[in-house]
Amino acid sequence: MLNFLPGSILFVLSTLLLIINTALWSSLIFIGGLVKLLVPISAFRNVLTLIMNRFMWGWACCNGGILHLLAKIEWDIEGLEGLKKDGWYLLISNHLSGFDIAALTYVLRNNIPMLKFFLKKELIFVPFLGLGCWALDMPFMNRTSAKQLRKNPKLKGKDLETTRRSCEKFKTIPTSIINYVEGSRFTKEKHMRQRSPYRYLLRPKAGGIAFTISAMGEQFTNLLNVTLVYPDSKNDTLAEVMHGKVKHIVIRIETLPVPEVDNTRYFNDAECRAQFQRWLNGVWQQKDEQIHQILLKYNSAQLVSEPVASASEGT
Image (tube, rainbow, N blue to C red):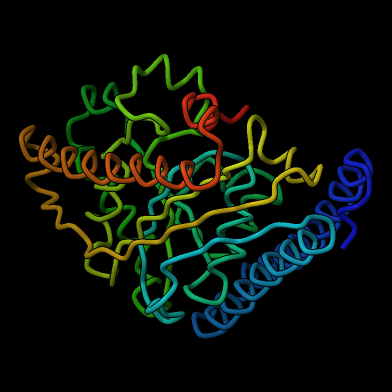
């Protein structure tokens, strides 16, 4: 609606509205977290969790409203059919921008439970952020380093037990957990440094998703393989969205069965880990080709001839 305004004005308006939106909903979640902390009654906490999730849903909806107000974006989405709000999903996706989370929560808000992330246990002590994530039932995990294991072998397997205990609550509450298997956002520099075999992706890391499946794989109904593309974004996608420069957002969602991970074998058998990594590499190879076809559809031949540059994202 206001996309006729100069980009600099759109950027200022976007920044103000996003700050207000995030401050409003995060404050409500923080207050709910305080109440949840002070009232240790399971049934009451479960109700509060549902309310907190609705606050996150409200944040996602308002983000969409801000985009509709300030930008003229065409959403090209496939694969929402058959998804359920009362399902349990493990979602994997390529990672391009700080805008990815806002885009995915907005698109998926009415189709699957609100997205959650595995967080390092240290984050729970961060003021406001830690309590807010706890209120939303984000699972906190402890990862023992190889050095710690060498010093104390008895710690082996403790991480998995701790994560499973933190995920117990998800047995009764439909849940979606997202895992960025590349480990960080795509940039041209990271792509070159890794010598990635893919044109538009970093190398996927199997350890995190294998750990997640080992901890709560029997709870997931499906794995969602999400491919996210900004065809007309050339540099910093978040900044370009806020300047009103991004015109198309493409999301492809593939529903897959959850792969089996034998946690006893996976963490002790190198061949088992290699086999799971090969499966994930195959998924990433197909994703890379899918991105290529999307860019062929949207971009000029010149842009497609330089795929890494077209997909890069500033940190």
